[in-house]
Every structure is written in structure tokens, then in C-alpha cells.
Length: 521
Image (cartoon, rainbow, N blue to C red):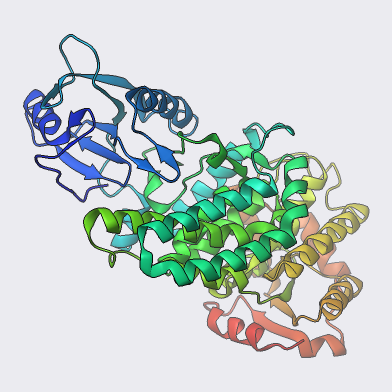
């Protein structure tokens, strides 16, 4: 939020923004920057950000009345303190006259501003992406923050309209209507997309309703694009959530997360998009939601196309920024289901290889280390000194874990996603069961067999336990049992195997990806 857009001499509603900017600059004794979005002005004085809502009426909001803008400012303060309490300070009245507004003095308020702490330039995900400095670590930190937030968020009441199939359809139609109104040249595309979305929504109607019954419609953020995620000193978090329409905030958790993933895809960073989804799904555990994720990814591309259309009309420029329309069309129908299972003892590098592969191939990963803990009532990312003693690596626990992995893999594949199941798969019977799943669904099947010399295995496990930052808690005792009980790949498995010695130099991810993509059903 650093690019300035001047509105010199323009009066819109109750306040003249250029006059307010001049007043603030005189008060603080330094220049004040103005940032403009399609619904707000933001004044940056070097210490604070003052956000004023434009008195505009759009298809999805109506800020034409001062009382509504005040109420929305108060709601914005309250709601954004859930994720970014350190940023949001108060709601400040603006007094004076429209041509001479001020933050001090007496008299009735003519406008309101949300006062925030101004964060450093370059802190936004959008800015870091443009500068080439947005890394996977920051993206994964936000994924974990979002998952924790969603797990604690309240679920929608069964009698509320939020998250229903009807509401999902209505939100999609409203966004498409907005594009048609803002850019008449898009009418043919809008008509085609309307038909495709309606067909998809009809097929998913029962799933949408089931998601609501299961409690996955929660009070979320609603606007998680790249320019609304920020790297602060202590954390990576989101700000500027939807406050003007609760129905755009009380949404499926998949809908909320889809926004950021889609925006990364639109900016040609599929690697970061799938790293985000991998970390978020792993922390939240909502793999059943993969059935609706593709719909929401496409819907979010439509939302950004709407915003781009509105901003283009306001500026008289429709060519700036990424074009989301083509991505929406692509996301709605793209399906490339294929199954890969890993194979190897603890410390063999299979999870590292799987993480690099999902970046390259745009895949969903399901991890035994996380699902095993979830089945035992341990937080997927929690550390538990007693977990080994509790038997999470015992034989019966492993059977339950592989049953869960099988169920989730089937959901992911049927939803059309390339799927990686990250587990040891040391027993031939387990490997055969997943091969049969791929055969039944008529999708390609591969085994990524990771090997390393025993000295390297021991070094890696000891280093991993010392760091304490990995979901796996397998120690040297577990490794010894695995080495003694592992069953080598059978002759008929060799044709599906991609064998990698991870102790011999850098991993050739490109070659592994080519081999997996080249596999046939």
C-alpha cells in the first residue's frame, strides 16, 4: 500500500480527501501519502494509517450514508483485532467542514476514520512478491496462523443463511453481475462462466450443505488476497477483513484460504500456493474440503476480476495487474488426479522430497506424521514427549493411520488433485492397497522410494529431534524397528518406482516430477 493515487480537488460525500491530507500533514509536520482502493482512502503519516471509507455504492456494498460508514468503521476495528490487535487502535471522528476537515476541534462528525499503526514499507505479501523476497517460510507461517484462527472461530448457526448452497450461488452470481456492469466487453465471458459455475454448484449443492452441518462455515476474514497479509516483527498475519457484509465473512474455511492460494497462482507462484495449501491443510486437517476447494479458487479469481474491473473503470485503465478471468476459467475445470506414495524409513528424506515435489507439480500432500497424531487426539503440530510411550507408532495405531490416509487420498483424487501420500509404506500390503485404489479410480500410480545410508539416517533423526520443529517424533528406537521390519519393493512394484538415494548430493526434483507426470494409469 505505497502507490499513491491523488484525488486533488474532488469532493465525494462528506469529506474532501486532499484537504484532509493537507491538514494531517500540517499536524504531523511531514508529508502524508495517500493510497486509494476501490472502496477506501488511506492516509499514511509515517506513524499511523488513517482509513476513510468512500461514500460509494457498489453491487456488494452501500457506503452512501454516514451512519453506515461509522458502523462499518467500528465493526472493522472489532473484527480485525482478532488477527491483528497490534495494528488496530481506534475509530477517529473527522470534524469541521467538507472543504476544511480536521481530526481535532469541536462539532459534529462529518466522517470517520479507522486509525491503525503504520507498518513498514515492503511488509505486505504483495510487495514482497513484487520484490522477489516472499519466501516459503513466511507463507507457511501465515498458513499456520490462519489454521489456528479458523480452529478457534465460531461456526455458523444452522438457521443462518451463511454458507448455504443458495448463498454460495448468490455470491458467485453477484460477482459476475458486477463484472458485467463494470466492463461491458466481458459480457460473453460472464455468460459462459455463469453457466459453468451454475453446473458446478448444482453438483456440489449437497456438499455445500453438508459442510455447513459439519461446522466448516466459520466467521473468517473474507478478503485474504496478497495485499491483506503482512509480515510484522513477531508474526505473519492478515488485516483489513470484510466488515460490511457478514455473509462474505461467515464462509467455508476452504473459501477463505482459497483466496490467497488463488492470488499466488495468478501471480505465477504455484510453488508458494501449494506450499501454503500444504501447511494450512496439514494444520487444519480439513482434507474433506478438497471437494469444494476448486470451486472456491475459481470464485476467488472472479472476485479479483471484479475488483480489477471496478478499479479500471475508476481510473480509466483496464490493463494493469494480473488478469484473473483466464485463471478462473482454468481453475474451474482443471483436473489432473494422479497418486504417488513415498517409501522409506524415518530420516530417508521422503518428506523433504515430497515437499519439493508438491511445489513443482501442484499437488496435495497427506502426511502420516500429522494424521497419526490427529487420530490420537494430539494436535497435528504439537510436540508431545509422551507420544511414543502412548503408542502412536504401535502396529494397531499404524493400521488406523493407513486407513485414514487411504480415505483422504480417495477424497483428494476424486476431487481431481494430484495427490502425494507421505508415509513410510514399509509393508508391501499397504503399498498394494494404495495401488489398488489408483487402479480402481483409473489414475496413474507411482512409488517414490527414498534411500540413504544408515549413518545418514541416524544423523538426520538426531538433528531433527534436536531442532524440535518437525511433525515426526520418530526416534532411533523407531528407526531400529523400521530397519528390522521393512519389506523391500517387490518385483512387480519396481515398474512404478522412482528410486532416489537422498544421501548423494542435491535432490533432482525436476527429474522426479517428470517421472511422476510421465506415469500412466
